[in-house]
Image 1 (tube, rainbow, N blue to C red):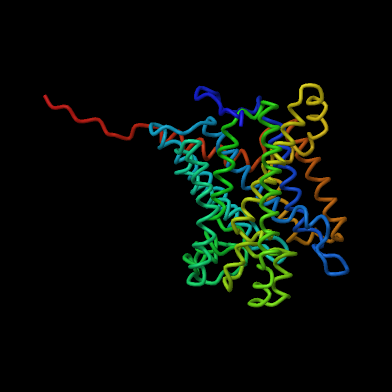
Image 2 (image 1 turned 45 degrees about the vertical axis):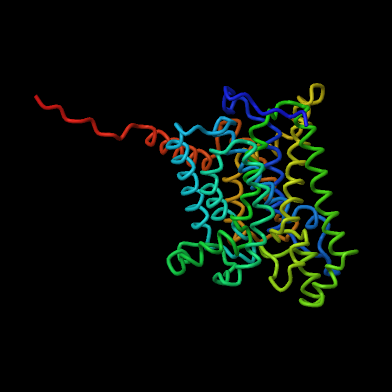
Length: 405
């Protein structure tokens, strides 16, 4: 397609060479997730709000795809060699541990207000360990296999797994039901990590591309949009002319089917019919949902990169999106503060007012912090821990042999 990956000698991204488009895309994803938590998802007629139909499911998927992009940046945008397995593995484990502990600490919060994604995100970091050692072609194949095979296996065996609580994972949940928590984080929860490996593969592939190239950015925009449209069109064909919708209504009832199609599923669809795998409903983790959201995430990223890298308007665009980029650079800090605020006595605002207040505060804080301090506080802590783990793992722990006269 005319897209070439970076040379193996390419240098890793640094704070001086950050791609504003990536940060801005991450900022859009975070603001979208905040909107899902803070605003009313339905109108007075009971139908999904227009904004909910746009951002729900797609924001979380974009968040996950960008996790893969970020991991690609930390691994020098190339396939990790076997010689580097120890520091790279230690770094990813440390990141998973830090993010997971933070997510569990936020587990006290009400999942009815906001579902905390961080524990699921931590599991994704662990799943990324074997992926970073794959070639780009192998990543594409792996992602394709996950998209097709994992939803089928989940449909077959999910009923044999413990029922998910749908509460925010917490230290108490971990102590009471460790296997149940693992099952929920991996397969049965609202952000199931196993099918989301497809997002990681997509992000790693994208992250290895030369994203500063306008040509690559245009391909990402066009290819992502085409993939998203094709997935939705195929779902419409299967459910409409090929009779899938009628089969689902027959086994599940019109109310259940309508709820899933309009408001999404809690991480997976019912297992009452194979036709459920034909839907592309948000958070359904079906093949077509995964393909559609990979497409929308890729298109959004390509669009923001194209806008901010364009020769004539790039400088102006980078200034215009700087508030989004600031939030995107402090994603973990902003997201965690948002979760804590929603579950605190401070949230006494109406839905729209409260959301706008959070957005305004997040932009002001992020821009000021980035200007005068640099890396966000939680981002700094995670990066420091990952760096220390990598440094320790790089040392030669083989004891020298004792010499005898």
